[in-house]
Image 1 (tube, rainbow, N blue to C red):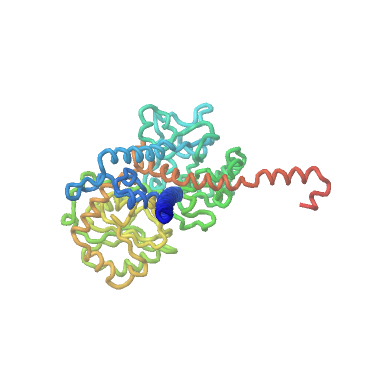
Image 2 (cartoon, rainbow, N blue to C red; image 1 turned 135 degrees about the vertical axis):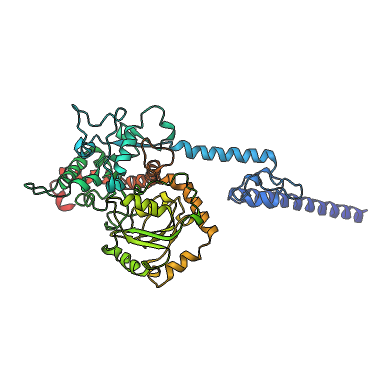
Length: 492
């Protein structure tokens, strides 16, 4: 009897231990499960431990939505696709709703800084022309290539006109405290082109005097003092424009053609915008002149003897001038120059864009408008919107050191197949509108693309502004102590 009772007790104890072990193991497994989820390992659980979980289809590492079906099995069930799509739409909505338009405050600068340079005369106290009645014309010829100041200013002035808001990237607002950036409407390139020479008996040029006035005006404004000029947008597209003022206004965001004549502490790709030239060659409308219809292999017409990095032009001239199917000659916009250049580019497969006095030139944008595949020979060139546009899809880049090697260029051009050239030709026709300046501006044209480039810089501007204000109260405290204590000036 005693043996039977002890056996029963032992059996009960073993059962109790087994139950206790099972419960403890279950608690441990569930604890491990929740720990993993709380430490961001849910994707591992969802994929490997819960293969039927709906969360697996919308985790960060899930395959793209609407993937192919395999052996009749739908990888993403329809209801899961709907959930994921809803999440994605919400994310996109947040991005889009955050900033539908760049909000721009524009100074009402006196007319002498902008439209008066075009010959427009102000009536009464009007600062701006009535562009709904008549738009003042910008001078033609080479002046046009640096005319971005004109197009951007017109775009802001017309931003309140009915019927145009839907296609806009920037709108003018009248309260500077609500603005993303502050726009300075000084036609600096036109000022340089027309007024950089000293006219006796004056001792300074009108261009220099306007720059001096601009610096005085800007640095006295509350908007400039508030940000130190960091959120100001200043146009200096001509390489020689703003030569006297740029050193004093360097915190601002410059809109430039390149960085060729700027030290990196004054202008650099981190804070400034590279904008396209306005092409002077006529756009090739309804272009059906494909590979076989373009008889010239390689085309260049322009100034051959240049300074600085432009020395390579004369080296290439002597290398290429006698090559078959190559047009390499001196040319200008004078006389019939533009018409001849238009015909030449429209009938050429490849167009040379060689560094001149500065790394960039208008020739690149003439080539794009002509659908002539650009061959870029400029090691230090910076290109518009290159953070979102892949130029290698429609341009050939050649290092300067390679370009001057014997037959290198000719062999390279001849090695590019008809199929590859046609692919680049088609791509140029798709993106040419990104480089078109026009008024009114249109969706994703050059004007809109520049504003979008400014908008992409705006968060970094805001970051710098916020960081600059970290010790604001400490500085205020120092000034208060310095003025209230007789010994403070020695202490500080």
